[in-house]
Length: 510
Image 1 (cartoon, rainbow, N blue to C red):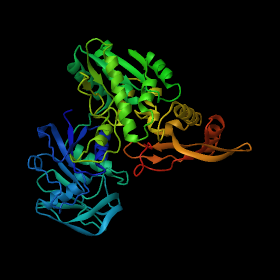
Image 2 (tube, helix red, strand yellow; image 1 turned 120 degrees about the vertical axis):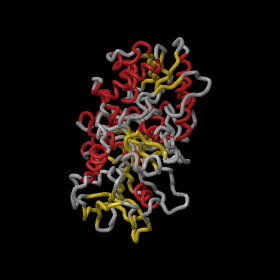
Image 3 (tube, helix red, strand yellow; image 1 turned 90 degrees about the vertical axis):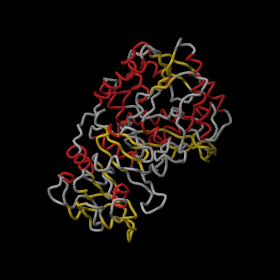
């Protein structure tokens, strides 16, 4: 990974998108908090400063020491980053007369600049700031303007330092990817060598070096992440990998059996463990979403602890943790953050479980995981599976969990998912599922009044789950699915469809 890009995060909601856009250019990038600069900055061939909800004029504004970066390494400041470079280097940042938010178009583009090569006047950009650069930093040259923002882009003469007051990482900036490519490839001179094949080759070799002849236990879920992690480890250490697939009683209908059957044909050493009663007993009477997640995570670890004793001299526990799991669980800006939800595979093991952790996918986004799997010729059926939460149906049953509720939701979910496949909609949806609501709804079946459960169907389109939009499924499909659920699943008399996007809603209901 000799072409690293360092992204310093100042707390922007778009920071993760910057990393993804860079990687889409086949260039490796990673995010670090602004106040925790890496010790060896020479590892990075370019640096990007993110946006921020803060104002550079505030006494509490993020204020890192960039003396070892600016003027020495190609540097791009985005929004707050551009204002930061101006404010602390001889420019002037002041409040905008009006908040500059939303679409804008470039009204001036300086000719002959590599930074804006292929980007002309009229190109749409996305603004999101309440401050604006009134005076450029010392030695700076204006490169672009919009009708409302005079200093929309600039460079510092004699340096490979650039600043833009718009966001190239969001899709609304139509030439955003081109701009990032101009900066990283044409100016910084980075090679576009971050490919799935290169990742597999590098990671397999690193795993061999790290693990050696020691044994590894891996929890398989049937999903994309754990399956790709298993294949990487299998390539690296072969029979020293021991895979365990745990039935937590909260899987989809018949999933325990079907997943075990799938893995038989992949050459993996897999053991199925039915611990459904153990999980359901631990969850009995608990309705708090966060506590349910923690219970499921705790029992999951306990089961692994039991199973680890069955594998003599096991030294490692492998996990399918991916980059968004880590970003969402820990504040990327280095400060305290609200817990959106707990991830059962983030945070390590209890002290009594003497296993080291290995996470082959910890720096990959979901779409990258799929591409890596495809490069290893894994079955499309596995790579195309929708994401499924680690706690399973436990967070799709709102309120307390019982075996009866699980059975109801499994039937509803099966009708919905199979319907998506039959109608050719499954591959057009990023994630879909059903939620069992803690609501008894009045209905009429035959000549009798009923009070039965309400279920909500959810289908979203996304790239990595960080943001998501609801899918406009055909009315005819929803009508058929609703009719099938109500007629075939005893205990359900009402079906609704969730049309909320993320943000502000999350994909799951709990």
